[in-house]
Amino acid sequence: MGRIFFLLLIFVFAAYGGNIRLKEPPKEIGKFYPPKSEGYVFVDLMHALSLSVTGTVVSVREEDWKNAEKWSLKLKENYLKVGRMVKKWDKILRKEAVNELVDGIKEKNLEKIQQNLKIIGKSCIQCHKNYKVSTRVIYRFPSFHAVYVEDPVSGFEIGFHEYMKKMTDDMKKLKVYLLDGKKRKAVKSGVRFIKRFEVLKQSCSDCHSSKDSEDIYFGRKVRKGVVMIRNGLKNWEIRKIMRGLKNIGIHNCTKCHNTHIIQAELQERFKKR
Amino acid sequence: MIWIVLFLSFLFAGCDTVKDVFVEKDLLERPESKRCGECHRLIYNQWMRSRHSKSWTSEDYRKKTESYRKVKCFNCHIPYQVDTLKEPDFRKEKREDGIGCVSCHFKDETGSIHGGYNVFSPPHPSRKDPDYKKSDFCGGCHKKSYQQWKISGSKKSCQECHMPPKKEYLIQKFPFKYFHLKKDLHDHSFLVPVPDEKYFELKLNIGKDTVTLYIKNIRIPHSVPTADNGKPKYYIRGEFFKNGRHIHSENYLITSKDPIDYMKTRSVDFYIFEDFSHFKVTIERKLSWKKKKEKILELIFRKEDILFSQ
Image (cartoon, rainbow over all chains, first blue to last red; front, side, top):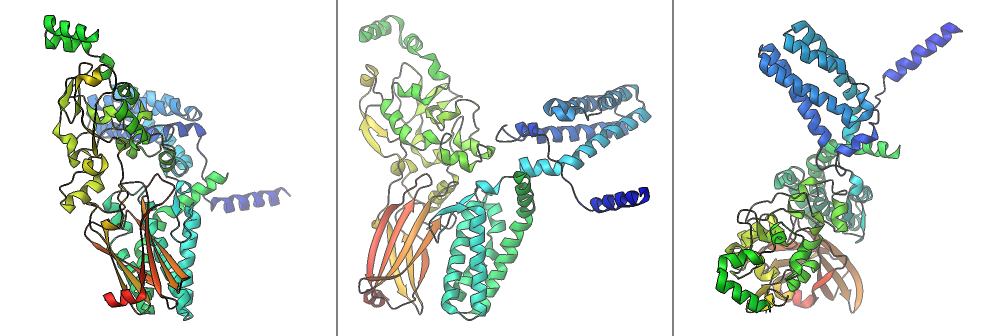
């Protein structure tokens, strides 16, 4: 019986090992991200901490002890600040190691320095492994739930997900009607698709406001795709319409989905919890 | 009584000393707009009606920035000091004031109020600054519209259309009201005039399956709709009629991303699904913050006239 239980345990762990788990970060970290704070305060701290680690390591390697001490004191300050900002994480900080590191540098004791840097580094890795992705997903990425689009077909303002669904439906219907040779229906779906696709641009630029970023997702090739569909519908050139759709698919849909869809889906899952 | 005090002060103390006596120091510490409104009531009331007064408190802005999450919007929504062709820094205090009086008119460099006139103003030092009548002054925030205007080569400044002047007193509070003669007071509600059919040139063409509308913006020296942010829209509606019976209609939404540029022709196709006798074109607009559309033009064409004009 014991053996079976042991085998079952191994099986469960082996199966579990194949999954990726993300831990939800402590709620208090939200205080350091917009809108509760102005700017990304916690991210700034992480950057400062990372810089002080590099400063310490580089200076120690070059035996520049004066700067090594300066950087290690910054490292200590930033490291301890993590615990002051997020109380739950205060317990997992290796405070004795960070003090020992500063002492090691003062004593120019390479072994002590190396040993304590390793301990500190491990604590960073552990925390990042558990929380880095989830914190980014929840607090760093903007939410698509806040995006509303005025539908040029119905005239109503609708949520982004609903809008995307309607637009995709138009595109699929256009393909179906083209393949089935139903011209009138294909024209109607095609016109609706173009209208919705063009209006989408105004919503994307809520965040991507510069001309350069606009050119990435609504650049020359995408505009060409729209013209091809429009002219294809007008002159009933099915191949041209299909090529236009392909252009848009490659240079717009895929690009944006690859950039946004994973974090948007993850964010949704966290929100549902 | 105040006149006597003023007269005697000038007589015995000289201009510089009197200037210091009458300075109201809080006016030099970037007060809220309502403080300016105590004297400049007319301008204050106009500003209260403007979008500038709501640039921070507007519900639309709150929603679109995910409750003020987008810090990059702050510079122009709560500017500390607006300078010509320079994106301002944002301020940390009195944010509810939005783009308030001092954002545009108080300059740290001179510690005085800048504006279009050189006036005697005992409560605060004033300076005449010709930039206030130039489009360049708006260009630091309204970058896109400014660029479009610049390309248009128009001689008309932003202020001429959006801040039309009217002869009024600068100040409404007694006795300061009578310190100056009536002057051209520029409207601080920042109007967005509604264009009409004179602003656009329309042409129609009938193809095999479509009626194509060609529309040209001939009088507004920037694209329409125009915006760096926000979602202003133009709506073009084409309706087909046969002997008075409505048979088919199609709406197009024009955004600031693909606008109708100044002096450029934009085409829109309307598919013909049935024979028709008349075609009606309606153009409307909706400003970013408005819920209702405003009509710009409505024209009805006979099919014969369209064919004849080709």
